[in-house]
Length: 145
Image (cartoon, rainbow, N blue to C red; front, top):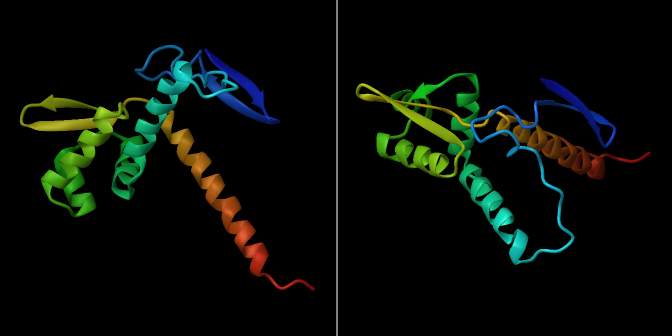
């Protein structure tokens, strides 16, 4: 079932209660923010920070972007990224431990795919932030007249 909701005047589309990822029915639905950071909600923010830290590397962002199209074998990433197998494996392990990607062994090869395709919506948000920041900087240097 697909739901459409309005948030801040914009339409947002959700599949069912969450995004349809492997994480479960409601795990991708944002929780109501607490008015105060305390021991009760600190774990949630720490968990979010772990995922963000896992994504906070250009190579890992590239990997997630490539996995949006289809699953890939680790050997394909060595060609795409021009890095040795151990470096690629470390990046994949960081993403896997954070729950961003999953792996499946097939014979001698290991294939990777996204656990939650909804993470790509976050990339769109980042692009909007970059665009607005660039527009602000451009406006600051444009001659007024």
